[in-house]
Amino acid sequence: MTANEQDSMEVDQPEVQDSAKAEPYTPGPDAVDLTLEKDGGVLKEVKQAGTGDETPPLGSTVYVHYTGTLTNGTKFDSSRDRGEKFKFTLGKGNVIKAWDLGVATMKRGELAILYCKSNYAYGENGSPPKIPPNATLVFEVELYDWKLEDLTKTNDGGILRQTLKVGSGYSSPNEEALVEVSLIGRHAGKVFDQRELSFNLGEGLEHNIPEGFEQALLKFKKQERSLIKLIPAYGFGSTGNEQLGIPPNADLEYEVELKSFEKAKESWSMDADEKLEQAKLCKEKGTNHFKAGKYALANKQYSKIVNLLEFEKTLKEEKATEREQLMLAAYLNQAMCCLKLNDFTATRDHCQKALELDSKNEKGLFRLGQALLGIHEPEEAKKHFEAILQSDPNNKAAANQVVICNAKIREQREKDKKLYSSIFNKMAENDRQRALRNKAMEMPEPTQWDNEDSENLSAVELKDHLDSVPCTESEDSEGSDEN
Image: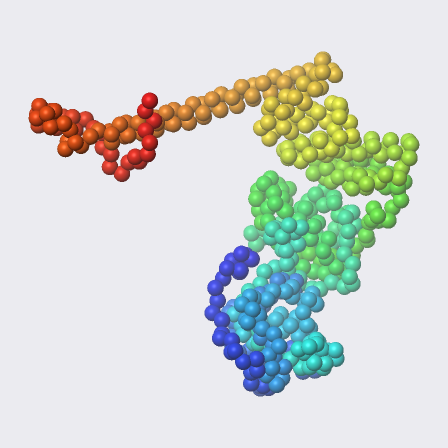
């Protein structure tokens, strides 16, 4: 179920009593101790059984209604009173310990009582003014649904994580970190990849690892094992992966364990000279990937140059010039990679950045023209090819592109001419029909005619005339367009 469906789902909710105090609760014989230590700190008593066998996995977003009371029955909080379900991420410490323990054992539609001692609730401090220190709390909780944790930057549901084993520590890999993983890849229920490998994040495609897999690892902890679900845009996309037997537009599922990782040095911890040297290495890697036809990988390396040097302004003299040259090359090479990947909008943006540094750069002008042709703007594209010819009249490639632009412009004008001609013809026909209807409606009724004329008009002539008037039933009688 999607989040939108969840938000719009109508449910039957128990009546909430107006009284702020309910009957005191005492755990019954069916209450189950959920604590690992079996210390009675969290007791759960099911009041309404749920459906199915599934329970929400760690890291999932759960949707519940609840009512919280003290042991004497005094109500201190209720989502039902607010008329809005409460959602939280399970197992991340966003709620009291008792809830992370209790809700993780519930099924969809289950209604349960959680009896929570203070060390699993708000502890010795309580939560003034409603919850006193060392208070045991009673929660009636109903679980409606959950959805897996979304790891995408835009929350589009393209990378979902189901945690199978919680990792250790608080640190996660960063971009370019060296990671060691164990993976099992599945498509349509069949295993297509199973191996252990080490690689640097950002270079996964070189090892047949999709982008979404790498993005997910940025959120992993050491020794974490999780199930990752990828939609095609974060997997192998519209091309698939012939080597692994993955068809185009395939959903993928990976069971992944992050065995270890070694973080890469962050750019903020580098001085200016280190950034410059790192940018040179990225350029070399990008060029090697480009020559091998690995345009997406090459583009990532060129992008790293921009990230390293874009805001580095402390370099002087020769090194400052070297920085500018690297930045210009990075933008131009990013544009070339995006052209190869048919991403014309990104190509345009990279070219514009390059031309900010060198407004007459022929490669920048040429690739910008190609990008504009790709997004169907031949007139704008022609301007950039002509700008090249102004400084280099013998540039045959630019001259050929001008010819192509002219052909595209003529083609577009012909299409526009046909389109507008069709529109004008329809408008003219509508005007003609409206004029005929209005003229017909202006004909006087027989009773309005002059008596003398009516005496001279035979019944046959009257019938012939009326038969010639167009039907006006259910027609628009607004003003006439007659001269």
